[in-house]
Image 1 (cartoon, rainbow, N blue to C red):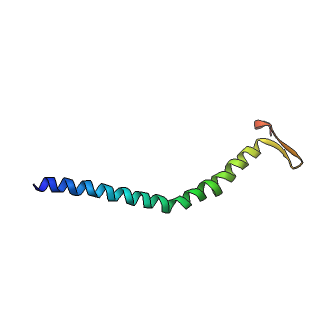
Image 2 (tube, rainbow, N blue to C red; image 1 turned 120 degrees about the vertical axis):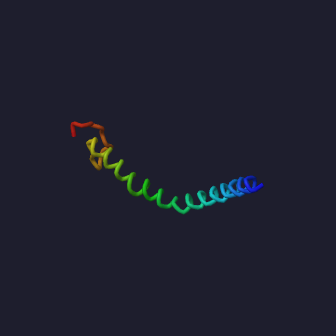
Image 3 (cartoon, helix red, strand yellow; image 1 turned 45 degrees about the vertical axis):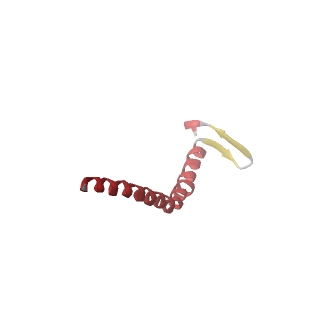
Length: 67
């Protein structure tokens, strides 16, 4: 009988772990938004602009590695 009780206890702990994972994800969500929005966004924009001929009065023209 003790093995059946142990299985029931383990099954109940998975539910609690899943709820804790959801809570951890929501607490980490602002960090992920900051990482992608504040760090990776400007890095990708600067990478794009480094391969373009950019003038403030005209739209950027893609030049590739010739720049």
